[in-house]
Structures are given as C-alpha cells and as structure tokens.
Amino acid sequence: MAGSGFGTLFRITTFGESHGAALGVIVDGCPAGLEISEEEIQAELDKRKPGQSRFTTMRQEGDKVEILSGIFEGKTTGTPICMMVRNQDHHSADYGNIADSFRPGHADYCFTEKYGFRDYRGGGRSSGRETIGRVAAGAIAKKLLASLGIQITAYVRSIGPVVAEKTDLSMIEENALRMPDADAAKAAESYLDGLRSETDSSGALVECRVTGMIPGLGDPVFDKLDALLAGAMMSIGAVKGVEFGDGFAVAAAKGSENNDAFALDENGKPVKVTNHSGGVLGGISDGSDLFMRIAFKPTPSIAQPQKTVKKNPDGTYEEEEMVIHGRHDPIIAPRAVPVVEAMAALVLADAVLKNLSSKMDGIKTFYGK
Ligand SMILES: Cc1cc2nc3c(=O)[nH]c(=O)nc-3n(C[C@H](O)[C@H](O)[C@H](O)COP(=O)(O)O)c2cc1C
Image 1 (cartoon, rainbow, N blue to C red):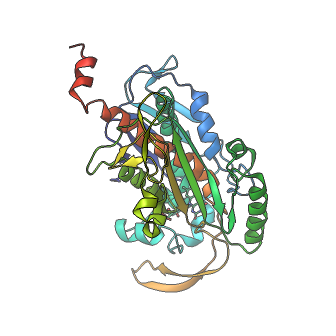
Image 2 (cartoon, rainbow, N blue to C red):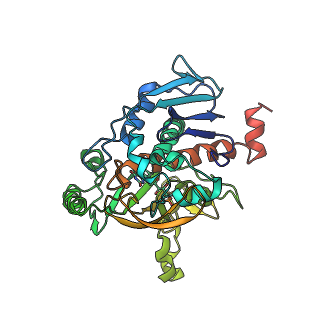
C-alpha cells in the first residue's frame, strides 16, 4: 500500500494489520552509534499497549518488541532497523457480522471504495494498532533528540467537557487518562463511566510541548517544520485538528497581542519574551518551546445500534442497523499520547539530520576543511 513511508533522511516504513500475524517498522537512516536498548523501546510501547485500564480496549496484547536488525551490542549500526510485534489476542470472529457493513465514523467505506475489498478484521490497516511501528521508531528518534537535549512531553488537556486546569507533568503517568491534573482526571473518569453506561465514547484534546529546541530546524517552503508536524499529527487515526501556539485564537487577536517581542538573554543572545507562535516562525524553529494542540474525535466504534449501509455480494447496497461487537477504546487520546510524542520525535529527528547540510560552514567543519 502506498503511503506507509514517512520522513526523508530519518525514514520509517510501517507494516502490518490489526489481526494479521504481526505489525512493525523499518527505520532507515538512523546514524550509527546511537545507544538504545530493547527496554527503552519496550517502555514506549508499554505506554501505548491495550488493556492498561478500564478506559482502554480489553484486548490483551503484550506488544513485546522483537528487534530483527540494525542494533548490535546496544548501538545502532547505521543499517535498517527492523522491529516487530506479533499479534496474539485477536478475536477476528467479532468482526464477521460487519464484514460487508460500513462502521459510521470509521474507514470501512473508504477502504472498500478505494481497494474494492478490505481486511475487515479489527479495521486492518486503519486500526489504532498500526501506530505500534510509529511508537517503536519514535523511541529511537527520541533517544537521538535526547542526546541533543531535546525532550518531548504530551498529555491529555481535556476530555469532553472536563478540562485539566493544572499542568503538573509529574501527574501524567499517575492516572489512566494521562491528564496533568489529578482532580480533572477523577472528574473525567466519572464522565467516561457515564458515557460507557450509555455505550458512547468521548473526544479529547492532547497537548505536546518540546523543550531544549535548537533554532533553525525546518526547511522553507514545503518542508516547514510546522507543516511537517501538522501532517505527522493528522496522519494519526482520529486526529481532526492541530494548532501551534495560540492556534485558532490568532484569528481573533491583534498584531500587537500576537507578536512575540525579542529581547537579549543573559548571554546577549536573542530570545522571545512570549511564545504565541508556538516555537516556529517562517517554518523554522525559533529556539523557544514547540507547542501543539491535537484534537482527537470520539472513538467511532460504539456498541449502540447505528444506522448504516452494507454492500451485498452482487455490488448493490442496502440500509441496515448495525451493532458493533469487538473490543474498543472508549476514548483514544490517553493511548495516543505516546503516538503524538513519537510522531513529533520522528519529524524533529529528520529535521535535525536535514539541517546538517544547511550551511557551507557546517559542511567544511564536518569534512575538516
Ligand atoms: C491509539 C489509537 C487507538 C484507536 N482505537 C480505536 C478503537 O478501539 N476503535 C475504533 O473504532 N477506532 C479506534 N481508533 C481510531 C481509528 O483508527 C480511526 O478513527 C479510523 O481509522 C478512521 O480514521 P479517521 O478517524 O482519522 O478518519 C484508534 C486510533 C488510535 C490512534
């Protein structure tokens, strides 16, 4: 399937379906000599895996990573890194009754129209499980960035009407909903329990902040950093909106409010006094924190009866009422937090490598001329 590759120099290709034998990724272009252990990759996958709480799908998958190539004695070798996770707990029979029907809000209709038929088991390639490869590759990209002092943190800012008022980053891994505010997490849990009893699901807002940014990342004009990050976030299933800095609020702002004044820091270097831009100007990082907000829609597969259409073997269509049986996330965003971080890391690692060729001075220094 075209469209499964991402990145230019730090390039990934993901593979696999929800109910196939395995899912994974090939990372090509990671520099040699980066120290990375299987445990570090597994730790990221564990944050994404199902069955973590009553707010994630009850599918029980260990999501144990197998590294097939490209890492030797704890270091990347500069050759393609292939990582794979085998599927274990797939109940394909759950999908038998909807094999020819189109789940409202899901990709079934569009896959069928595009390819003529689809792997209906668990959503095939349009499943959230596809993000396993992104998270495994993102763990490597994060390690590369950490060696430069760049750190990425995402969390859930709001769930339905419940907004986290505090931003206590130490709380994120302390609650199942990955909210930076313990009180908001409790309120969101009761909100979700209510929705579950109505067999409904909720949307949510994820925020992502990148600290330790290097100025100069991003390539005008089509590979602007914010353009690549927006594309990366929009490629995650269920994402319907991305904002940078003040985002859509800029439409109501005045220039005098929106501009970030420059000043000199204690070392006499230019810094921005505010960060309405979200860390990018002209598509190039300005050295301040990158800040993005990513809107996730409610999980489309809900267990209440829904009106839809099915395709008959003779190619005709008929209306029907459908009931979805499989196991689904009542909310996507908490499990998508590591996916958001991974996609940000992949864009930034690629931008770091591409930036090496931006100036003659840098090229001469590298070759010792
Ligand atoms: C981590 C993750 C988990 C997901 N879990 C589910 C799920 O359990 N059930 C479901 O219907 N959709 C789930 N989705 C969303 C679908 O993959 C997505 O809505 C679908 O592919 C249609 O794409 P679109 O919403 O981007 O248009 C999940 C997405 C992600 C990123």
